[in-house]
Length: 520
Image 1 (tube, rainbow, N blue to C red):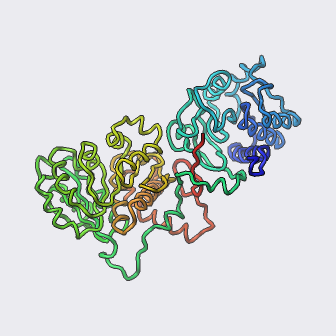
Image 2 (cartoon, rainbow, N blue to C red; image 1 turned 180 degrees about the horizontal axis):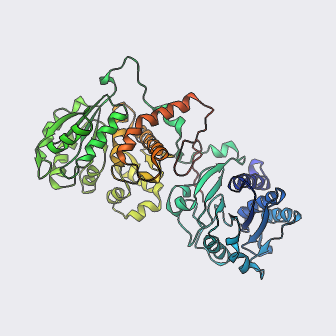
């Protein structure tokens, strides 16, 4: 940072202070801490924290995963300042080192300042030994910038890695917080502003973490004089004898997210299920074949397509041969903006060409693996690159679902979702998301906007369910019911700008206005 007139020693002081502030929240009554430092800048941050902790009355021990003569200059200077406050670091060549590692379990907190953003290659030696001891200790861990042993760009584990309770990352969120082992090992994380130059923080990265203000700016408005015909007409082509509920969930979500009209086209059993659970929807009964939509139903759907402002294809259709034939007759002539979900995506993975209309594809990792003809592990290993590859291959807007869902489109940055929680990992959640995105498409958002706003809104509804019901056990229909409440929550944040930007969450709390940065 010297080229910006900001000495690295100043940044270390600020980083150490930020982590110290987080430490005080974890140990408000004080306690005994061990700071495990590396030989580089991350270790320098750790020495700053150790000094501040001693000055505030904490009992502090510092272990260093290097020999003293291996410390880099800035780290050495911070070590000397810590030593002047009475801290005597124990280096890995000290005879006391093994015993101190085994005694970590007797402390109140471990601060992980071993490795920062530049780590690469499988770990070995004292750094690996220390990380393994930290994890064995069972003591809460606070990591500086990233959990040591995690690749900053991919979230991959470098042989072993710290499992942190809390991570304080500097300046900008890092990709490892959103994917791979890093997603789990980072624990609850926050971003510390340590004074990086604004021109550096504003440099385009191709990835953006969206927040409530960004989403609110795109939310469709409801005019006082509007009627149902002004608020979008969603057609949902979904369901089969075996999967009747998917159409009902999607219809309920579309209605709850404000669609003026919702029509479900499905076989008789599906229409009866929708009638029972979403009587506000209108119905188009379609002929069936072996429990799913018959190919002959294509003409019935096609003859009415210009009545609708968006269409959802896929939930519960099955990927049986009659369904693929049905879609193959419709899609070449389909012009209405569409969401392709579930079995519609399976048809694409089997070789069916996409419709020529604007569209949003909403795969989960398994569906994405089939679309890109790779393994799920490869999808999850680098979710950012996976989403970019899907956008390039299909030329459509994409939502890659999962923890921190991603939305991308041609010539647009990737958007990372900052809402949602692990309680949403249950059946039917994707049907609800598809219903929300379909409504936003019907209300004239672009596919990219609809995908991005829809995933944020859906995740916020899930967070409200977790807050009210509990983190595990709420179901998709609960999320559908919470959709209007989530919108009201967003509006209240706009009305009260003094309220915190971070929305109630059951998982990690992000710093939502900052973009991501790719390192290396």
